Length: 154
Image 1 (tube, rainbow, N blue to C red):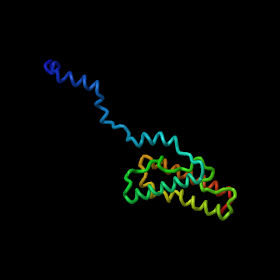
Image 2 (cartoon, rainbow, N blue to C red):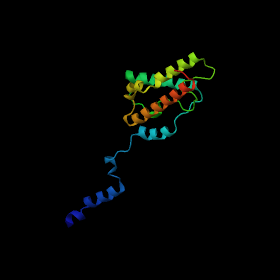
Image 3 (cartoon, rainbow, N blue to C red):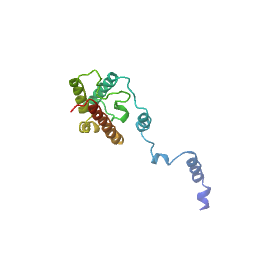
Image 4 (cartoon, rainbow, N blue to C red):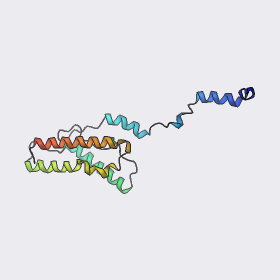
């Protein structure tokens, strides 16, 4: 017993272990994208106009296409998706639109944001973010249905 305690090998690792956090590798920190995601989720980009949102959506569709073709390997995060924040109309309708124009814009937006249309996209969203993406898509769809009621379109 005493021989083992007096051994420098036994006492040095105890000092080294107290100085170095050895147990931490067994509990890895969250991946960098998750910690960034946590910050970005609360700071979602706001668009100044529907045109800005539309341009961001087109860029997202390009990145999605790249992911499907294999040129983009990283999964999407909630913060990678352009959410229609800061714009009055999710569909891009304006008060001067005719009923036919408003109906066309709303239909396009409802197809874009329909939860069923997001099923293939969700396969390319980080697993940890999928529930939040689904929830946000449902909120956007609800906003669109409210817009549809405002324009009294059937």
